[in-house]
Figure 1: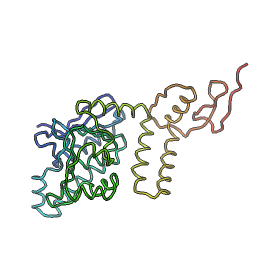
Figure 2 (figure 1 turned 60 degrees about the horizontal axis):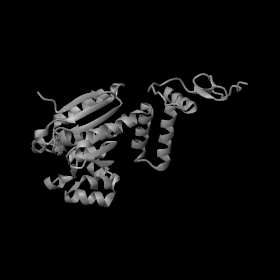
Figure 3 (figure 1 turned 60 degrees about the vertical axis):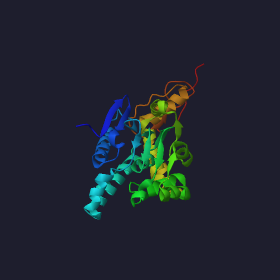
Figure 4 (figure 1 turned 120 degrees about the vertical axis):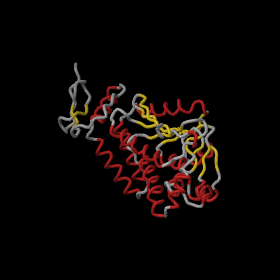
Length: 295
């Protein structure tokens, strides 16, 4: 049986592909469950440091929920529809939004309904110039159920989001970029190359620092500024006990590229190392001191 979501590791990048091209990569229950399972696997693997999600085929990233499957749940009653469809979809987009590794979508075609909501939840998004987006749930008599009534207004603003939610009109990739839904629009034949290039730029930095940034931004968006600053401080404190901080500071002092390990260590202390006239971070003593310059 063909998997509904394909998984491939390309170096440190996990590439996931929604794989129902004959159904425009509609998000049936098996697809949602498979995607959640793969994200658990990726999170647990330290060798995988970023995720790219795209769609199989030339027509769609994802056309949204699988309407025949969803309709069958509706016929079994509101409780069943809520459990099988709404909770499952919201769990998926919440998992993407809070994922501790950079999650990038490469939108290669239609991103309607749930496909648009995945794009809203993702950390970063690059769209093909052939991509189109829509919030068409109102056409079948329901509101968005995977988070679209909440995330789109936060990205685009209340009035612009409401126009899309209340009309169900489709919109271009360029308009999606203007709304803040995607980071950039690229020619279709460059989509994956440009998405990989973005991921590789992120991977030159500390994976631990990236995780702290993602956590601070995700948790802070719905907080007051005071609460958000406390979250930021908490994430900074967590980074201070890592080898990556020591390596980053020492590399800056040495004027060389850092080599990050992604490992946590004992609380950092500030001590001199070998080069005269400079102080270095290590885990031995708190007090900064400087070696006398050689004569």
